[in-house]
Image (cartoon, rainbow, N blue to C red; front, side, top):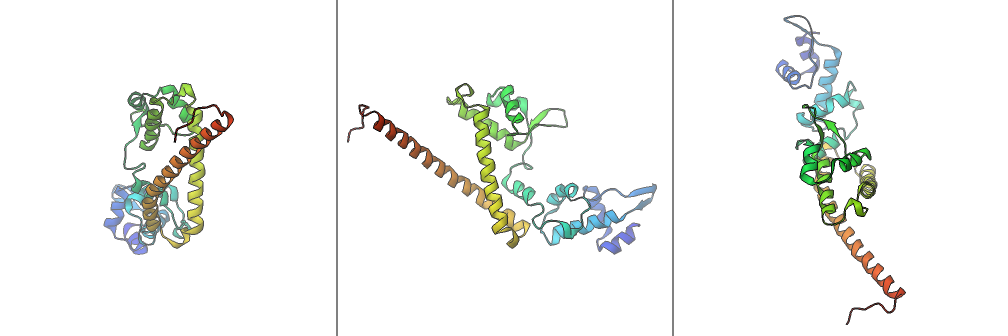
Length: 246
């Protein structure tokens, strides 16, 4: 079909359609001749999908652009209710898309963590290596944060040589996966059917930092309690051990 027919069938003007093509939201049309553009049913389905995600799911074009490849040619009514939730949430939390990847060599240099250990952490699936356009090995800003902060833990004495290396961090990651599964399962079972994508991402973006604070307090409380329990057990097993005076 030609542009005029695509406009009529989609209800979307040609300038908007051309803008979508320039922005990568729509594929280029077939051009059998220099001044002839032929559009297909795929263009019409894609326009329907964009309109649905904008009007019914309240997604901005920047998010829709990231979702286009994942959506493929699915009809709008086949798109899940919270389609794009993870991308909108990452944007709001600044987890990925708003920050640039970090070169692994520079990360090693800045953090002081040896490249061998960083590679071992990647081998365990805790962080993910990718290639930049310049051919450099990079990690996401979030993964860089994991390495930088773990390096700081090691720098105060909790070194890999003392048992605080990859295997210990792997246990942290397993706990994080368990908590993540708990949070996501609870959300989808209790709230997902009551909120749209925009509301869901806003709620989660507001709650996640606070829940992390709560978990930090709970963990600190647990550490102090476990230390006290260990000391109490030591005193019971060794009556001659010195005791704090009243």
